[in-house]
Image (cartoon, rainbow, N blue to C red):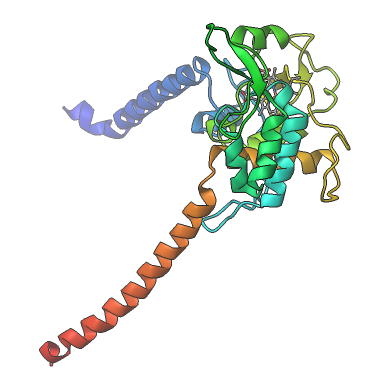
Length: 290
Ligand code: HEC
């Protein structure tokens, strides 16, 4: 007992060191054997400890550029002129490979097209309908009630035409990816020459550090003056990328404007109600307090 009493400080120190060593071992195992997503605590630990960024995921995508979108914030609203320009970009570029199967031509009246104009756009597409009286499918011009047709007959055809990766449907892409609008914008503007010494895993991919692995099968879909905007807006890559992103945000969340307006009304109502209730409370309790 005497020995214990005399050396209590040493024993405590020894135990502490043992616990800390076990803890460090635990962290080391945890870090070395599991990959970490960007922005997580573990990713930061890799960085601090200088462990090869993400064991498991080679070249994690760069965090997307942050853009100030008109629809951001609780009062944000769509810039409908930009949404319509984005539709033009979608139709003239993206639609060659990506579907938009949640959007019907009649929905275009919600972004400022007249019914006649939406009908005209629909009629420019060929859709498959049927079966007819003989049981055959047939093709006809699109109508207001049709949805944007997919560019490929099926998933396999889409994969075969694109070196093995089917281009995803874009209707909900801004909701399906983290930081969606900024992600889409960054991918579209993120192409460029690979830095010296960059090793491609495949010879059909393109350099794009905003996509995981920094290699994407999609070729740069936008280039200067690719579209001619009716309203005279300059069609540089950043502008077209922002326009198509505004459009794809609308396709994913067409009710955002109404939702934000309603939120504002409800908040204003609650504020007024609170003030009224506060004063009526004072009136009602006045006599009691005296
Ligand atoms: C020539 C065909 C083609 C065109 C045109 C095209 N894409 Fe793609 N896109 C692809 C393919 C193929 C992929 C899958 C890439 C991969 O997995 O490496 C892809 C992937 C994407 C992704 C990433 C999807 C994900 O899973 O995170 C986005 C976003 C995207 N495309 C948006 C667009 C937009 C917007 C346009 C129009 C401006 C467009 N694409 C035009 C073929 C195309």
